[in-house]
Image (cartoon, rainbow, N blue to C red; front, side):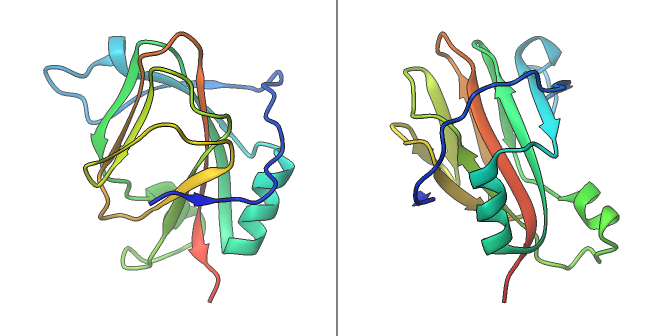
Length: 155
């Protein structure tokens, strides 16, 4: 179910240092040609940082830019790098807030736990965990932007 960050700011793509990635898992249908997306770490988006500080004890922020025609296949996150960076054991409960940075545009799609999501507003988010399968696609005509805040929830 979508939750809402109150008073989200306006997102503007800056001259971010985007890193090109291939989505996973790769199989007979999903390869580099249809799973490419850009990611940027330690982004400076003030309302996302404020949300992270109010929600998590420890956290990391990244942005994803998904170009038209690209998808990220169904997968479950393991939070491997976050756990390694913070010296966490595999059994630690790590969560990820997937935050939509702009209002929904035709062709943009997100799915979590077999539930489709469209028509979101900027600042809407889903809280994901290691057991929740999810996927993303951009079948539209403009880039799709999301933020991911990964971390340990406050008590």
